[in-house]
Length: 163
Image (tube, rainbow, N blue to C red):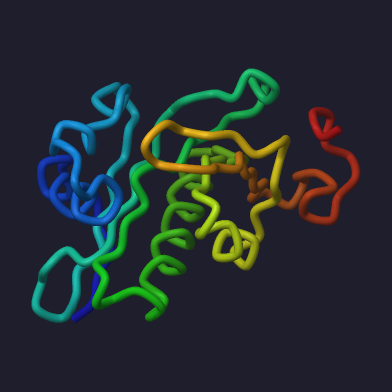
């Protein structure tokens, strides 16, 4: 049976390293702030109960969105053999569900250039200009409002922080 459930960081660190930090020390897959209270690690388990996908939800505010409850998604990784099989989509949907259950209306992330189309398909919008992260590459900040009273990013023009 396929499941997504909350896991410990130690259960996903090697997958994150293999997919996101290959060729770098494993410690580079251990992200700043993820040990803070409120952080949630989600693992996608395949039919053999092996974790083949993960994402971390950090309680970290973008300065331009400080008045809105928000999570930052980080460390989204899917095992190479399971990519393009809707694992990432399922993880995003579970992150949205988790956020709503915690009364959080906004999720944001820094997407690698090769992942932007995936996030656009999930309803995220690009915010700002691309930027470089040394030894990783070009990234884009992306935001998604997940409550109906969101903003013009999701069809409602009343969001006070949307410019």
